[in-house]
Image 1 (cartoon, helix red, strand yellow):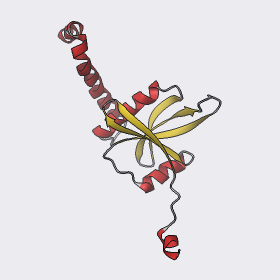
Image 2 (spheres, helix red, strand yellow):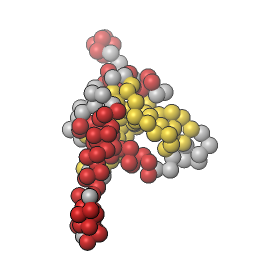
Image 3 (cartoon, one colour):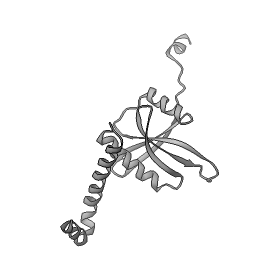
Image 4 (cartoon, one colour):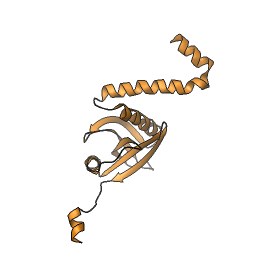
Length: 145
């Protein structure tokens, strides 16, 4: 550790990505040990999304829980005026991951009909989408029309 700290002091800018990566690897390992069955990719995405949510003013009490067969971030989301607050879920996913409508509806039922997706596109880049439970007509009702 002494040589590692010496390198960090001597080359602080050049070593920053390595230091961040080292911390991320430790974070992924820690999260996976607390969340059995979580894949390495999902743990990475979860940490990226958690980091973004922690930097936002309107999120509090964030925790990772298993809901409807998915590891999801649950927290208290405040309105823009901070007058109201509700418990909401954020599902971390990557840009190549497909959404399953049945899983979406199961999660939405747990969180007042809405799920927020934290889509990780690059390390450090997260886009958030809030999607309500789908209300598409069944195939039978479309067939009758």
